[in-house]
Amino acid sequence: MRRRRVHIPPFALRDGTCRGNAHGAFSDTPCSWKTFNDVHDFTQEQLFSGSRDNTVRLWDVATGKESHKSKIPQNLVTCAKWLPGEPLVAQGSEDLTLRIWDTRTQLKCAQTLGGYVYFPLSLDVSQDGLYLLTGCKGFNHTGCESKLWDRRTGKVLQEFRGHTQDTVGCCFLPSESPDRSPTHVATASKDRTIKIWDGATGDVVDTLLVDGGMFTCLVSGTWAADSVAGTATGWQKPGSGQRSPCVAYCATTFWGGVYVYDSSHEVIAQRAAVAE
Image (cartoon, rainbow, N blue to C red; front, top):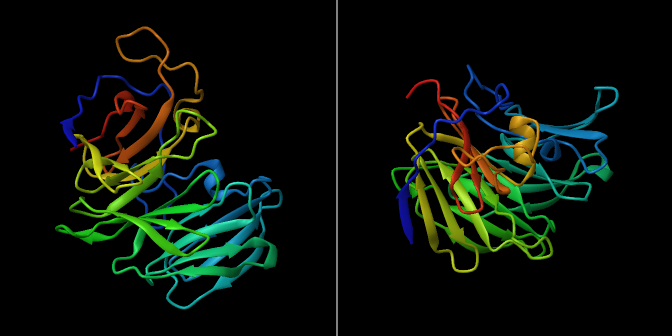
């Protein structure tokens, strides 16, 4: 296992801000970062939302009107993501469950996964839609774990333990080859670290320490460059004068910092934090 402190180069993102859409977000703190594919279905015609009022809702993108709503007592929604290419949405809750919603049936719960001691705060879905990754609430080394689920069996395949505070972001890392399943996952925590894990063994293979405040979310994929800077191909790696490698993942911090990493876990771009 490597543990290293990352040097953040003085390089600013060329475009504006990254704003969260979580309930209770304030100031410029990116509390959550949802990509277009996180909240929209694969047809880009529907949008899914969840709230602390115990409801999940489906919206018609064209009209902006609510099409369906479902309410389950104590379902305080903490995270959600569409399954790639399917009319299904995974959703985490403070009631210690992970639910799969079927949007073809007017938002009926198709599957419920339990077994949490500390509720899920963050969520990602593998590109084949077969595996779910969640990061959990925790404090002072208690809880804070991430769980890798097999959606077909409803069983936990692996747990990743090592963070000391809330695991506020998690993601499957892109494979080097598009026809290969991801073998590593990443998690971000309020303990100011990002950890890279071996998905098969559960071992930590790298720990990144960043002096930019507590992390608030983590997202994966080459699309991250589109979301932050307007293009995935035109970025310049600081000091190199050449295009950056493929964006592997992007993280944000409590004070508004945005850090973009390549597949070697090096920072290739950043937006500096407002304060520390």
